[in-house]
Image (cartoon, rainbow, N blue to C red; front, side, top):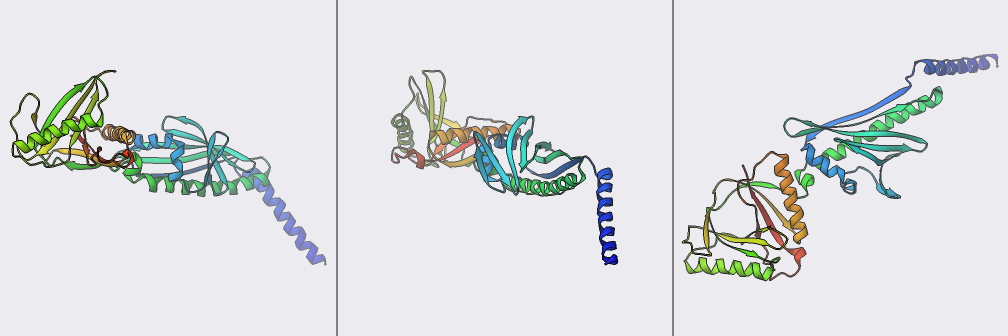
Length: 316
């Protein structure tokens, strides 16, 4: 019995000694940090992350809401938006009675790469037992950070997810376009636009030329009451001009950005804006007017949600 008691006292003494050592040697703050680098434009990524409603596409866990705030769960931790700074998102991070702020920082790198860091500093309790528990919690939080950054990088390495459309760089496939333009005192209807298209088609047929692509459309709201519309059809040769019909030369083989989308005018407008962001983010210059290629005949398909449109931006 004495030997058994002696062993118990030795064990208790070691535990007390361990607690005392922890009390004096363990740090009073735990810095949790994870970093990842991948190919993505920093500005485009920041714009995507500004919209917390899109986070569910890449977040490696469950998403929900508390009151007016969107919540993101990863393991035992819950993250909510606290504030947004320059290239930094501050997230409130909670787990049971534990709470801290995590900073998601975006750092642009050369070669269109970005470094992302998730970091926090956790103040540890002076109580050595509580301090040890928080250190173990810090280890689990670091593991959650790693999963979050992996999910983010895996999703946004795909350029389509950065801009919401599949942007391709192509070469201009034709050299000549037959066009007609008109200014309207009102927003032109589809019937009016296709009336212009028909005039171009009839002229091409009359001149014995051959169409080489879908109708092209460019519109510009010049004022609150004036709309400029130009339509065109690519052909294989230059045609003689008249007061209405013009023949335009295209830089065949030049660089052109293209994206094909399906949807109504709002979808088209959003896609154009994303294409403009892409041009800005990648320091490209537009060298001619952009245009829409009307793959779907709008008069034959009344459901605008089914319209297929290709957007083109000639660039250098």
